[in-house]
Image 1: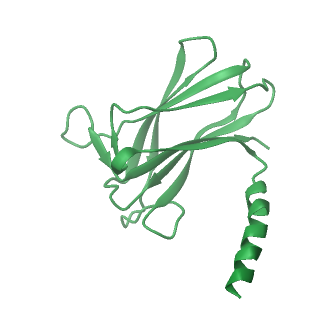
Image 2: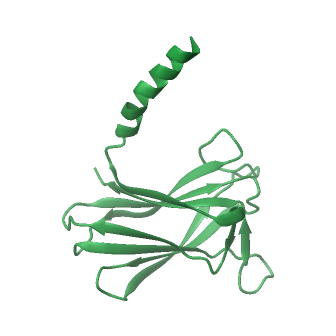
Length: 163
């Protein structure tokens, strides 16, 4: 009986994976030891060829119960191909409910959050775009922000077609 259930699950797995027809790019990078240093930049290189289509961009965050704050502040930098100029955004996201429980999807102590970055974006020229993500969490009374941010296990970047 167990073998039959395993076979059915494995047979259905490709259908579950292929249902994500909006995905253009989706990648995660692990944060060593679950502690994100403020000087550590997580970068993603994305090859874009379509300059007409519109896309939605997301920052994905996996965190665990060690995450000590209600909010998450990020600096996200987008660099166009063939230039050193970057568009830089400072973003704020709510990570916990008013009662202190972490927001996000997941049944264990790991929660996954799909956070909006940009909506209906077009890429003006084809080529490799670079997205850099850095944490910018500040603690009241502490100058220079939080050096080591606990509880972040993975940072991801996702691009979807805007349908």
